[in-house]
Image (tube, rainbow, N blue to C red; front, side, top):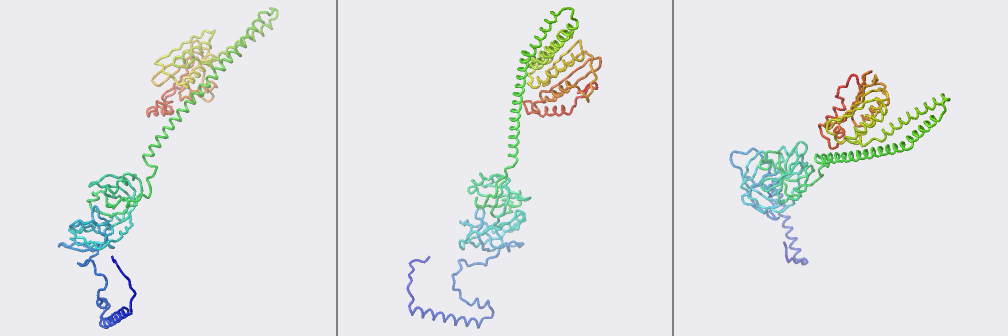
Length: 520
């Protein structure tokens, strides 16, 4: 650096001296031109007037010439290049390639330093190494730009010890030996690793997520000391600035898919819970409305029929005996009123069932049967087996109405002398059988009656199995079976399990062998 420089205007004497020196140089140049045999002689005859080189020694070789097959004797070489990596190892690169340098004496070098290196060449599989090398810094320079390549190109080993740029997808990260950070990456079918000093990459190591797309800059090495013979090459990064995140990991990965599936399952269960709760509220409202209508019918229609019957009876008793035709008409009207009163009582019994619990279901069916045969000689027997369980309201209501329809059909059409009501509780199963010894019927599957269609519909609504067996002169049997776990399994209730789902499939497939004398 120049200091205390003073500038003065040139005098005439100074100008004359400068012109004289110029004329002398022109004359010397003319003499050299006449004596020159070739252009190189002309160039060599000029004295060195510029700055002298900082290092005078053996002529530098190109790095790619050191990759030739080595001779048996030890080879010493001198190269000149730019430092591309100083730690964990020294790498120098020129315009033809890069080389690893093992210094004889460690020096404080920086990336971008222009150096001249002399050492013993040690040949390796992909690139040589200068061992026991001496390094002299020539001057500071700007860092060398990377060579942009694909992972497949680098895997060939042609760019070993070269400062490159490559893209890859992060598949994993771990802590390696010597306090290093190792990143596992792949680019298409090619896998590789990136290695960084811990102090320079702790923040990057903690923030990078698998699946991210990275653009990496570093020195490619194929030495097994760095690759552990697991990948074709490793990339030695200088700092965390050599790793640029191009894109974060995709949101739709296995973990998020599992979370989404669990969330959807929970939402389905919650929706199913509220759906069944709403259905329960609706059914409760329907039952309450039925009960209200039953009370209204009892207080109005039933009482009116009773009043009409009393009035007709009073008229009949006050009628003179000499009006037989009129008395006959009053008797017919009384019978019609009595029959209508009985039908009204049956309708009220259907609309206003008793508490349909485990015990109440059988009791309600028995009471309805008693009302249906009131005044007759039909024997009724109601039995229960197994340990009673609490039935869902929907199941209990459906079984009650199916049993009630079976009893009403038996009394109206079969004219039995005996009715059997059998309620059985098994493990997660409830069954009802209604048997009579009436006249029976020949059922036609293609044209069932309204009552049978109603029973089928109710059984289908709760996923139950319904069978009706009947023979002329031998009576009729109505059988319904409802698997409580099947309903829960189909709605993701407390009884949901693969076993119950299999039972549901078997149930839908109709694996139960039907009776040849029955129809459903």
